[in-house]
Length: 425
Image 1 (cartoon, one colour):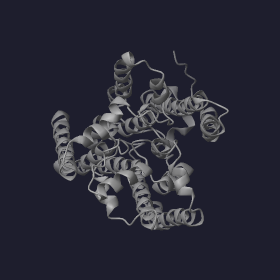
Image 2 (tube, helix red, strand yellow):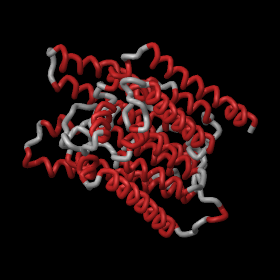
Image 3 (cartoon, helix red, strand yellow):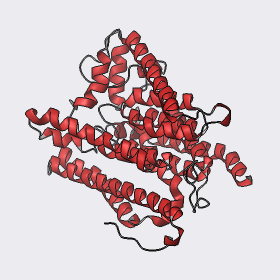
Image 4 (cartoon, one colour):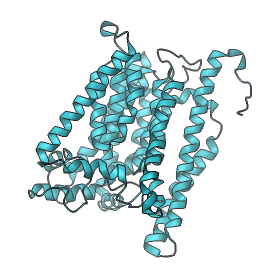
């Protein structure tokens, strides 16, 4: 208890240090934000800050932000950023906004870690539950992760999605299901894919209900929360319609993700595949890719029902690989969740290979992109090959973490097997 109080008292210093580091980077390297904004590893057609500025310019001149097919982000972001001074003249206000969002995300992570939900849920308690990191350490790992810092400086809009997802999880653990569903609705409104997190989030919220207003029926509880998400999204869509005066934003913001009409290179698996795809097969493979992305939700939610937080973490890792327009911001969200499962780290089998693969692709990714786009001594295969290695590293981590979680659960069920070697068949 005293250690938790000490860490709570230390978090303001941690947040101040993280904010100061970002301000120093912004101040002493003024060209770095624009450089990172143009990197395809960080910015995508649906999150780019440059595209947001284009949409904001049209919005401020009473032109539909979706004219020209450049802006593909949520309409309600425009009033928010229109309140800020011009980023090209007074960038400090935009910098401060993104720093605040990072700190809010870290605070949500802190609360998730301090709850102990990762190692001791309602239906499962790990034998290794004492081997967990405090919220202070988990928040520090997130705030000082180079991927987090690079994402903050590049200013993509998916940092708002990350913040909303983490707060949805934190509120579910805190026993506030409506607030959790509201945060998930906002994340879904911004990026669409978070709606797939709804089943495990409902399970998590159900398990963490307060005794005073606890619902005994899971189907009833799930139905109420699905209705709540539907109503919240309806309000957000209605507000977007009133803001833009048409439903054009639906096709521009969500339709592009469903149909992949913009094939700008990124760190994902979709763009190159559909560049080479014949038009006659395009609709079929779009359906296959989306089916593949969504099919993990049901299986993981059922198989690891006792640990809904683990399901959420694994799904975030899967989405970071297989969503249409991924970036390192999505991977960073998954990396932020991994330290919550410190208690199963001894059960991981491929730590060296996983870390080596991720570092290898992190270093060579920008080099291969440079050889392709700027030096002209390579082609698209160079960059796509290294993105495959990047996805392989994430896949190794996801599969290894899944194994460790299931092995930990199995050892609780069969204590006589602790420490014994097993073989997967």
